[in-house]
Image 1 (tube, helix red, strand yellow):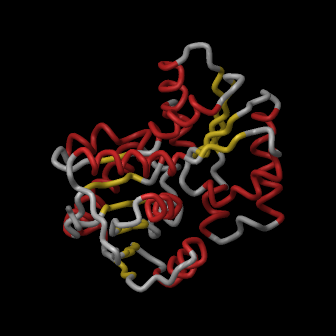
Image 2 (cartoon, rainbow, N blue to C red; image 1 turned 180 degrees about the vertical axis):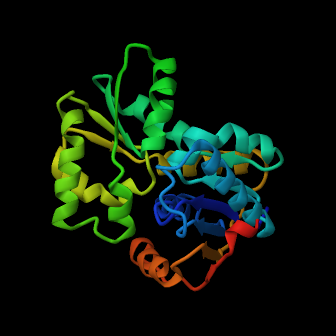
Length: 268
């Protein structure tokens, strides 16, 4: 048994979708979460900057004695995962793009798949590349949706303006007759109810967080690193706006956040 926590990080509140899945499927595991709320969004930043920010966060998480890390950010996963694994070779790292690809392959019936994400994720072409490597007959259509992240970060996911923005962004994908839609940013599952209103019940929404949590469970089991703590500890850290994050986290996770602190992340 290894009672050390799992480290999870994202550019902001979006990674809480991964935290929620880990809490549900790996109930005995403690978690240390970092949300880079001072520097969100990552999707408009260069690969070099995204890699630099992510390395700073991982160095911080290592000071918290984490045993493994989930990169709960598609922008980081699609642009920087190889570099980060080279920089930090001694700790297991799970990302979210591979899990999204795995779920899409097992979900689509028609082979027509849509992907929404940040500019950086869509421009990396990582999802189409990995999907077509598995099945060259697939048709994969991507769409950058940069306004989704600020809508979530500002708590506007259920407002009318969100519906209008989602409708506008998804129109080109709906015209392609997709049957599956990969939510290629961990913020986007927080828009699920609004997206469902736009796409209806015929299109399956794919949340890579579910598979990422399962893959982490597999890694911990294979390496004899699991924990069955009856009272796991959850710690949350941010780079800015501590109270705002706490408020949103408590609503989304439906539990009180007892430990939250601001970290001067640029010092790492």
